[in-house]
Image 1 (cartoon, rainbow, N blue to C red):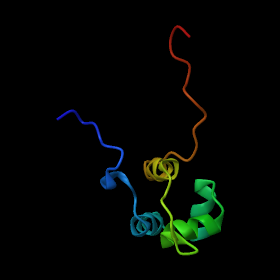
Image 2 (image 1 turned 135 degrees about the vertical axis):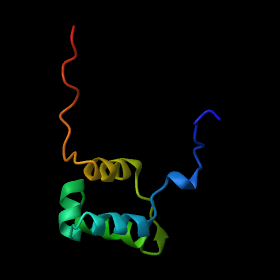
Image 3 (image 1 turned 180 degrees about the vertical axis):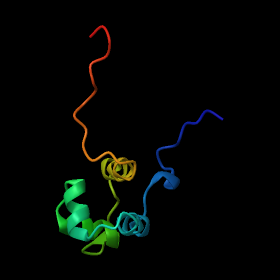
Image 4 (image 1 turned 90 degrees about the horizontal axis):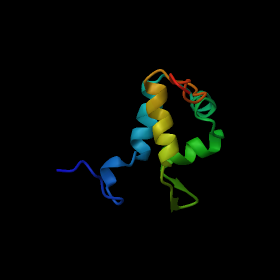
Length: 86
């Protein structure tokens, strides 16, 4: 097995339910979660509901990765540090 994931792999997409569970596990209000993710509260609410005006909403990969980073204790990233020889 090569470890490659297909583009249409649903296993890699965070569901609305999982997004809300993440927020609650982090003990964040919707307002706090929106702030740490750099989102407007209304957008966060769409992600938690999984829809906007009857249309399905997918949580972007950038938001999913930000959730992971926050879970790991990273709240901001200033870029790579200088490597030896740079």
